[in-house]
Length: 136
View 1 (cartoon, rainbow, N blue to C red):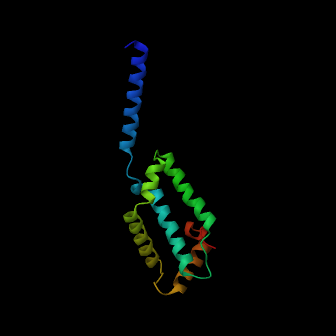
View 2 (spheres, rainbow, N blue to C red):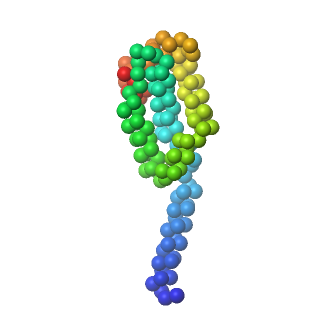
View 3 (cartoon, one colour):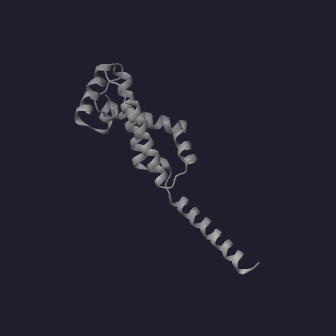
């Protein structure tokens, strides 16, 4: 093997090792706070819109918000396949939905009482919170 192909091979191996090191250093996507909390926030807004007739989730704004979470994950080095695997994980989805419902209850929403969801939604809209920005 001549020197030039050998240097290319060494560069390729070094690059692969660097990528493997970066990949190994990343936490699971479920541990990325901005992404996890963003999904929970979107879930809370959706649940309010679903349970309170006069309030709707802003679907286009919601899609844009979720897309910003995906862009953030990509900026951290997560691949589309890793992001899709996280989003498609049914156990993780159930876990995040449970967290969202616990937070809704802590915020005053009571299952079977739509007005409690409406009051919460109106308060979030008035406060201009991230949840409120996803509602109308």
